Length: 468
Image 1 (spheres, helix red, strand yellow):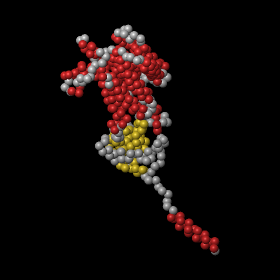
Image 2: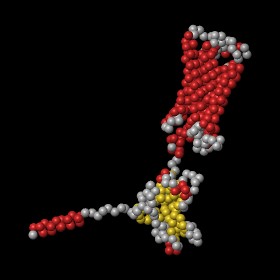
Image 3: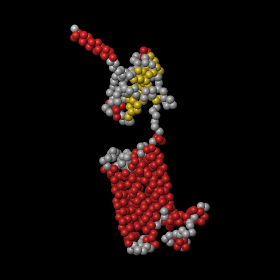
Image 4: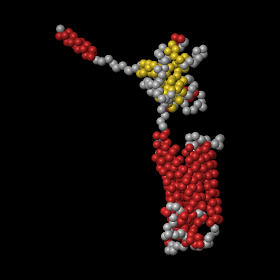
């Protein structure tokens, strides 16, 4: 009797407890946007009842992000075209063999896969099991509607399509990287170009500055100005014209190599002048300039031809090597190395010129007029050497896969030209005097530009004025 009572009580308790257990949670229905009513489909751009055709109504097929189809998801229809507001909507057809594919995700979003190129057939590309790696864009609920469409009732061309709102494209003007690379950098290049032209014109126009060092500075600034133009072309053709970008790339490196050879020539001339026992027994500056020109442009042309040859024939990283002679993209690493190795060698040689010339100057007890002039030229050479070498090093660092390094190169390149303008023009008392004498002198409206009474010329300019 006791056992029967305990069993009865246990059954009652289990019944009570079991009755209080909540039912298992049900998955919420995912809203799916449908263009026409549930029992309609699109026929010649108009919604019609499916009984008027030989087709069934459209039913959604869900796919996961890995490309697996026929995922079972509870859903409810939301009828109507997407509300795009000020944006327009356009149609995407899900046709086999086309570069577009539509996939309805389990969360109710519509994913539009699209191919970047179609050199192969559409089916051949889509058959490759890399669907998740293709480019895609997701449309949230309310920004699309899907439907089955019949284009021609006689031929029964049936496709699934979607009406989607134009995606919001982020403004590139708010992108800091775009502003730095496409707006600020070309602007700074233009300002640098103006600075180089000013230095070249000043040293070319003023006859007192047309000595060998002045001619070298003029040619050096012209080279750097052409390099700025080439770099501007590189900036605007990086993603548009590979052949133009390659040509601009090669021209920029050729000009940069020539500029460093000219700087090396100036260092050699100053070094040799200080080592010479008799500085008066020398050939004219014009003939020396011709000799240095043969050295600079000869070495530049030879190294440039070697670099171009290495790029087109020897560089294994060049994807367009052999049978076609036209390269796509930038200069390869091997060609770049051929350009930059001589620059590194000239930097080492210039360091040797600096050390040995400083030792000679420190041992000199008296200075003649020519040595006094060459001392100023030596100081100018050292400053130009430091500025150009630092900027060249930042150019090397800009190749690292870090945006910050490229931004540092933009800054260094922007500072190089104003620093050279200051070194070659504004910081030299002699050049300022000659500029005021040629441009303003006593007739200048602004009193600050007139030469001061205590400010006199240097290195015999007063004797040159008397002989005129």
